[in-house]
Amino acid sequence: MRSKIQSFFFSLQTAYFFFILLAAIFGAGSYLAGFEETGRLFDQITSECIWKYIDDIVANHLLLTWFLLLVVCAAVVFINTLCCTSQVLKQCFINKIGKTKQFRLRLMTFIHIIALAVIVCHALEIMLVTRHSPVKILVSGMATLAPYQVKVKNISYITDRSFIQEDVDGKRLPGFKIPLEKFSVDGNKAELTVYRDGVLVKEGEIRLFEPLRVGNSFFIMDGFFIPHHKGDSIGILIHHTYNPLVVPFFVIYAVLFTTLLVQYIRNRCQISVQNK
Amino acid sequence: MTTMLTFYYILAFMNVFMAGMLVLNNTFATKKAVWYLLTVLWILQVFCYFSHVGYYPLSGIAPTCTIAALTLCLCQSLSLTRDVGSKRPFFSGMGLLVLAVVSLVPENVPHNSFMMSYLFAILFFLSRPFSLGLTLYALAGMGHLFREGADNRIYRTSKDAAFLASIIFLGGEIVGCYWGFMGWGTTWRWSGNFQFSAMLFVLYMVSLHVPATLFRSRKGYNIAFSAPLVCVVFCMLISKVIS
Image 1 (tube, rainbow over the protein chains, first blue to last red):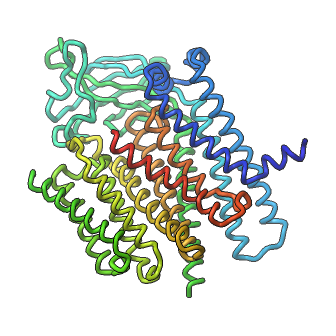
Image 2 (cartoon, rainbow over the protein chains, first blue to last red):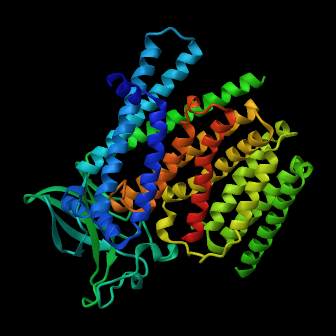
Image 3 (cartoon, each protein chain N blue to C red):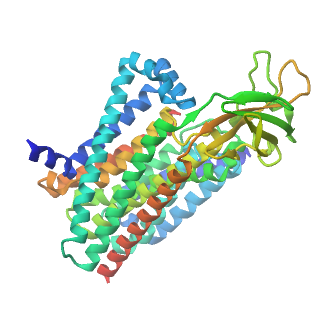
């Protein structure tokens, strides 16, 4: 029994079948997101934190099954990669093999170690990262984005204001529908001051695609608005996210991408040498 | 502006005709001049599209198909000298024919949104057609292996093309995550789009992790390698047409 479990986790066939299963699970998830109830739950999990909606997920049997399958599948892929990598690592450093083969094996092992880090990072991100719903703040106004208080000192909006005018229902044109020539990413900005327990912690500008960072917290601008009933006054939509993993996340991905490219170039070089 | 759109459709029909000729006549498919001409025609088609709608809407059917076709044309042109006598140019022609036909599907031409002008958004959208073109090139090689039997050179170039396609796809996902984080504060969303992308990437992984011990024959192995890539191509194209 023990050897059966061992061979299951040390086999490339396991990885292959679970990759197929994982692809099917993601395909099913993509399909489920199209339904009203599951789509709404997915949106809520994205906008805030998975733990806040855990009861809703448990109540929705279809989504619960999907989540469990995803977790089990990802866990098996993780353990399988870990086992196979440890085996190759042993081969690399203990068994004697040719220099070229050794380098190739070491590179492959490194790629798989980084892939393991990617899986861990994704899992931690889903569990640790918290987001808060966006709030509207008018110029000179203040709002609490726990544990911070944010004050909008000034707003500079230099392009056509009709695109951010709210209607009677408080709705406005979505950002992606504003034409390029009618919006300035650099010119449209807001000046913020961020306080924590009444103490100033950060002062700075915020733009679309340029969040304000305070430690592991990020203040992200979602857009500008002009309230229907308030004539000329302008405001911003802003939300706060806590993400301690953002730097390691992108570093790990950058390392993985670079290593894969090196592996590809080496493959091509080897073929060129063989063809000569 | 309308003239440019008319030119776009004229060129698309010309590309359908040329790709059809490649499929029907194998001698025609192995001529270098034909592939160079095709490359020029696809460049003109891309140019007409961007002249008509502006430079930033990269997520539609037209930019996806035209850039993918250009990638496929360039890959095939580079390997043509060694491919004389092989069926790969014929299968690349089939890939081009599919792309040329899909590029004729009418779509609502989007305007240049300021959100699409963000560098990381551009890189994200560009990664998809490059991956698609390389995947089709990998499949063209596999098509040759199915028809003519073993050829180590073509097998290795196909595997490398699929590998490069997956790297470019992954690169696109990374810059897309960065775009998502800077714009919306999340690197991952539980949305249909994100899960669809994850599915495509895992399909590349399936293709690159086929265990040799699982199949008795080389043909079985080649089918297992090609099937996920066919799914990737199908999903990429159908998602554009449906959306």
